[in-house]
Amino acid sequence: MADVDAVLEGAGLKNEKAREYVRYWAEVTGPDNIEVVSVADDARLIQESLDAVEIVPAGEGLYYSRSYYKDTARSEERTIVATNDPADKGVYNNWHPAAEMKAKLTGLMRGASAGKTMYVIPYLMAAPGSPLERYAAGVQLTDNRCVALHMNRMARVSVDYINNLADAGSFVRAVHVTGDLENLGQGTPDDKRYFVTVADERTILHFGSSYGGNALLGKIAHGLRQACYDGWASAAFLAEQFMLLGIIDKQTGKRYHIAGGFPSASGKTNLAMTLAPDALGSRYHVEFYGDDIAWLWVGKDGRLYGMNPEFGVFGVAKDTNETTNPTAMDSIAPGTGAIFTNVAYNEKTHEVWWEGRTPVPPADLDGWLDWKGHRIADRSAVEARDPWAHPNSRFTTTLANVPNVASDYADPRGVPIDGIIFGGRTRDREPLIRAITDLAEGVYDGLTLGAEATFAAEGVDGQLRYDPMSMRPFMSYPEGAYAAHWLAIIGQCAQPPIFAHVNWFQRDASDGHFLWPGYRENLRALLWLMQLRDGLVTGVRSPVGILPAEDELNLEGLSIDPADLDKLLTIDTARWRQEMGFREQHLAQFGGLPEEIWEAHRRVAAELGL
Ligand code: GTP
Ligand code: SPV
Ligand code: MN
Image 1 (cartoon, rainbow, N blue to C red):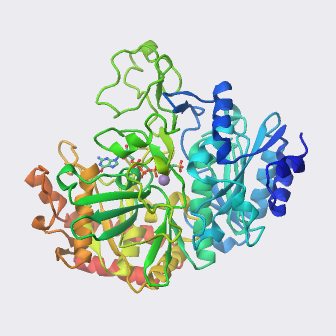
Image 2 (image 1 turned 90 degrees about the vertical axis):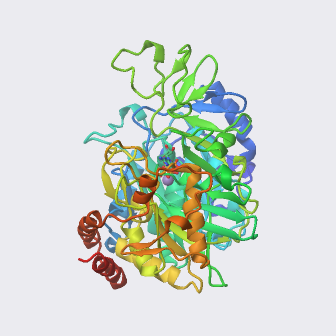
Image 3 (image 1 turned 180 degrees about the vertical axis):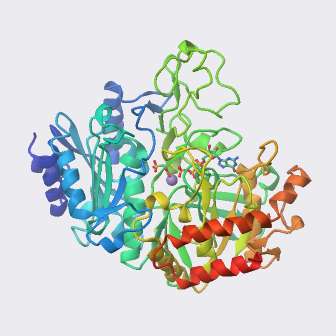
């Protein structure tokens, strides 16, 4: 192996603590070469990956990659939060002792990068100058060049973010080793994958995957799991799986910012990138800030502030098209440098396709390969109906490629948050929107967020599961303390945000059609919420929050079946009563849940006549 110090010196990595860390893990993992990555290296790394056929061209300045077929989503069972304090064990964080996990991972990683290059990726999960910058620096090590390419798009990457830290050792240590993907026993009792965040040592050790959420350590592992823990330990901020958008009312000049959590693959990217419906476009403009992570803190002016720590979008491809999400389509257009993963690919024309990109797949099958690389034209009759793209296939592109990205998206001061919304994929019970003005009831609503399972995590489609604040897969400390931390942070606000629960996914019980058209039309519900906040409408009280009166919802230019609208704006009391029983069981699992949350639960139950 090359002289590590000479390489780091040559690349301008001056932080001695970072050098020590790289030396240590190079010794453990045993790569043949070491290289420090900066975003300025991207074109060369792309060319090297093309030459090595790790990626293939997908149009001008677009690239396609395929991950191993058993490695296409996050694995929740294999994801662990480790600390040195057993009291950090929660219901969802899959807690293990730090010492045990570090020994385990060091063993798995020993010599596992032999024959490969270790890429050293210094990054920042914040805009430079952010009040939360001290929690944002990290150095990822990876033995996978495609992971380096993705990090260049998803995070701010440069040695400059590491060289001048106030506390030289304060970066997150994030080690990724791909492992021998074909021999890891994925999904078997002998599964060798381990994705561990040693939260109280700010160390991330991920072994056995090259897929996004398991391999891009700045994003989920640092941006959510580690930051969630840091925010609690410092009592300074919240880190949530939230999208963040802005709405500009061109008529009044007012700007609103809304953050919100929907479980994985439930519509954050689509909502954050949305355009106003055509009929409302002359008055409203929607701005994109972030689609997957928000860090939230209280500003000196007593308002809640939010920012997106990421630099890119790792979005679900399925059903993304010119109608559902035109800004997403623009952000992956020729010349954007976007990378597609696990969609279908035409080896002759270099086109890509996924379910829902067009109503039907391309008619001419010549050259088309499915996400596993199998020729579509050779499919047997039983395979004929299999999807061409993996349901969790994704695109990766930088924020600046999103045409409606907010002009101030990189402003380190963040933006004031007017509303926090929670939403799941729920086929019944949840109305289009219900607003909640009480803090404890808002936090209670987040804690009882539920959704049908999706393909972003391994699991069964269609099953309902609770996903507190959409953080279930990313929770790093006990849920009771998490609720208390939420109450404490938002409780400091002189002007707290309004809460709301939204649902774009209610279906007709008989034929299954979506009652609400969704996508761009979703803005109408958010506009009502901001009007309610401004006192321009009053809504209708229900046991579970304030619902829009039918004439308060701006339906200009929208044709919707009056019976469907009726259902969208009413409460199914019987279903809600049944739900309250499930909620009680769900909340009872959490130790140390603040009494305010139980009081909120009992208030709602009483309103429902229980
Ligand atoms: P992660 O990146 O996994 O955290 O997911 P996400 O919450 O960002 O999900 P995303 O916005 O990518 O949406 C996932 C799927 O839901 C896509 O297939 C979308 O087309 C679909 N979807 C999004 N919004 C709507 C909507 O308003 N109505 C309907 N019916 N489907 C939607
Ligand atoms: C999610 O699964 O919620 C994602 C994609 O946003 S991943 O980066 O894989 O976690
Ligand atoms: Mn996500």
